[in-house]
Amino acid sequence: MSIEEKSAELMKPLADYIGRFDLPKSIFKFPDHVALPAEDITGFSNLVKDLEPKSEQRVLTETDPRFVVAARLKGGLVVDRLGTVQWVEITESLPLEILSEAEAAHVEFYYPEFGEVRKLLDWRRIDYSIDQEPIPQIKITYNQHGDELRFTKMPIRAIVANGLKTDEFKLL
Image (tube, rainbow, N blue to C red; front, side, top):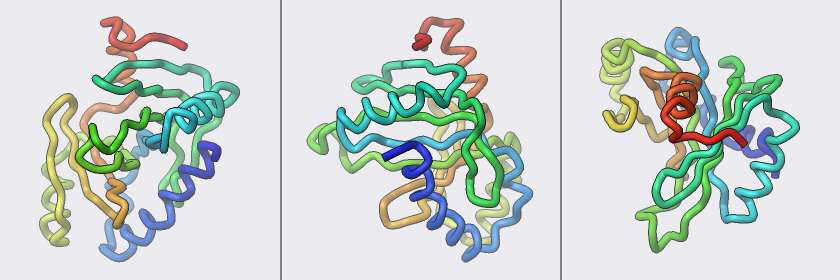
């Protein structure tokens, strides 16, 4: 399955969720990236190979105990009617014995004003969680598969640039 096909699977339920809760487009102004977990090691390899001709830059990092590849795309990837992302993240799969549950995909938006997003979500009575580490994020599960809509205070391009400076990320 290609990056575009895997990404398209996320968009319909996300669009339905956004419509059901009447979330304003103003919080979706800055699409950041789409993160796609691979089903297995072969799927990870295939998705990374699919990225090669479509990307300007690919980086690899290890988030113990798995590998993650982030790629800046040449053209971009459409996120339903919300815009286009320039980055895709592919996560290596792990056996369920290691994970507490299957790894979820996510669509992430840059939005530095967490207070505004939280106020909106509270007003709409939408359940969410906040992670502070490694990067502050608001996470909302939007379907039965556990896929997430996320808001971050730091775009992936800044994370990659910092990771390259500190040798946490390696160019592919």
